[in-house]
Image (cartoon, rainbow, N blue to C red; front, side):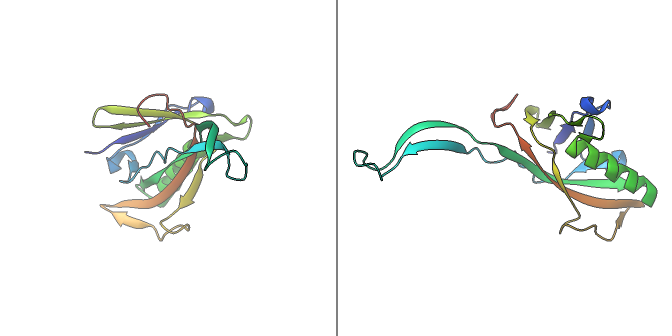
Length: 162
């Protein structure tokens, strides 16, 4: 069962960019998307205090986490591929030359369940499988380039359990 990843581009004056499972659209979500580990920032009273045995939890809150995965970009020609790579990088980073970065919404749909969160920093994008642009692959007449990404998200989801 394949999922879709939707990137809200309202801040850029554009419609959503959807990474699904159909290469004909030019934007495919590769298996292995992660919404990150739930971790906590903790303030504890440690063993260095004479009247505390072990550690005592004083305060806590959820720490930031990262949405990470890989998308595959398909183009009918080299020029089409480069244009779509630019479109994908712009969607995943959301940095505009005029207004800078603004938070945006990421939605993952899988098996009828929606997971939604807010990206709180520009995404980091890594071209290719090893951090460099691969020699462009071909599949059924399409040019293909993988892009890895990691986007810091608000730890409290807008929708879904993660």
